[in-house]
Length: 382
Image (cartoon, rainbow, N blue to C red):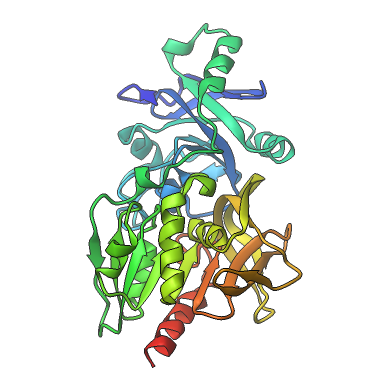
């Protein structure tokens, strides 16, 4: 990505999809060029958490909500230390933020962090296009440097950008050094959390339940995990293609061999799938937003959940599977398209879900999953 130092909101901008579809609008945020995978998010709120979610690394996010930025940017809601999206696409950006917690405008924050965006385009038409054709590479070009450049030349640059399939990105967004999130109140358990792109609210949710969380780099080994003497092991969300994550899969298998209570979310769910011997595949356009219906098949209850994933586990919905670590079943399923949304082992304490129970942003229907993890650790200790 290359950007200028200041984004002029009125500068012309053009969005070019790899299949040749073009949208013209105005610059939003920094001026320059950027490339990534075009995806859409259906959340009506929570744009600040979306922007700072490491799982969006190398993705250009299209907001389906037409009006974005009206609550500005605060210092409490970021899920990491920076914005991770490669680019940002909105229809009608707020002219002035209005919220008691706002410290600056979204436009100014995008400029400050060098995030190239585009506004004033028909995001509904773009979203329909991505639903029909699938997520694909995209480029955003804005400012004087791109005036007069032929569309064919811009399209050629888009096609030079890397694909998301085969992308190994977790280590690019994860912590480089281990850090500890202390338990809130009395410490009850110690958890080793493998950071594959973890959101800040996730260890906080565990800390609320008396868990001291040791957050380890994506490159952590099984020896690193067990050096903290954990009562449980957690594998986080993150970006990229799970087919490339051989290192985390090996660590996951080591944890399963020792029968340590295990919980994974999002990318962690895909890692568990691979560790059990299932395949993974790329979804046509993925699930992204805070309004996705999922059924917990272990209880029959339906919950509204927050998602951000473009890959899924290929596991059978209609039967229990035999794996190297015992019997496994699909515990959760998306009611929109029957995509696997969770796995659990029946012969040892391990489970995962494909969505985001930390609810940042999003509904709190899935908070019980952290309690389920605690229950596994309590049972193992007993």
